[in-house]
Image (cartoon, rainbow over all chains, first blue to last red; front, side, top):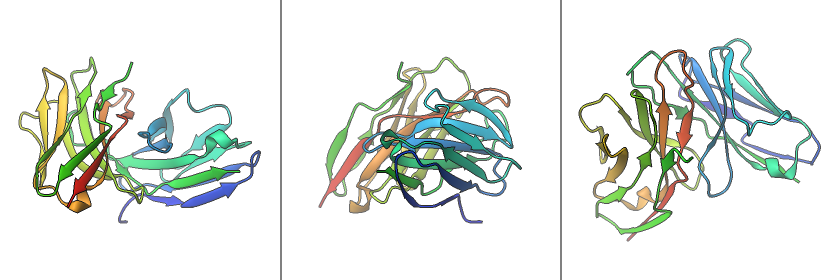
Length: 117
Length: 118
């Protein structure tokens, strides 16, 4: 396992369609994050998991967005009824949380670029 | 309120010169971590360096060092002997509340686009 893997790398969909992205974190990492990045901006936090528990959801994550991490390993991010404003890069990151003061850098996948036409 | 501020939208630096990218942060937590990431045009987010709030020494990783000034809430990235391959977007980020049951999202600044000139 050499890093965080995201699939697909690119997705073009028609407005109104549903899309699902997958993220496979680094195997020993217990935390998994989803971010959205639009052109020229920094990544915006969407949600994160500690093992299978979803600990926080951003208000950016509307009802059309849902994320799961059913067995505490890979995660999926689904967008229902896509809109043109959903076009962005969706980034997944993972980290190994060990406790207070422990170095816990997050490693990112290469992202899924979504284009809604 | 913005928690991570990067005041330099773009910078141009001559190759082989050192460059400092500014980052200030806002938190009321005592325990937090600070990160710098590089994002080249290919889009991948590359981890560069990490500084924990309790670390007494400034973090260093090869040509990268983090100038951590806790009282000023400043975490500037210093790149020594810049190279053409350093041209990229650079993001400062923070992780608050390093306790097990605390919210733990990583918050990013808007980034600085660095251009290294030959």
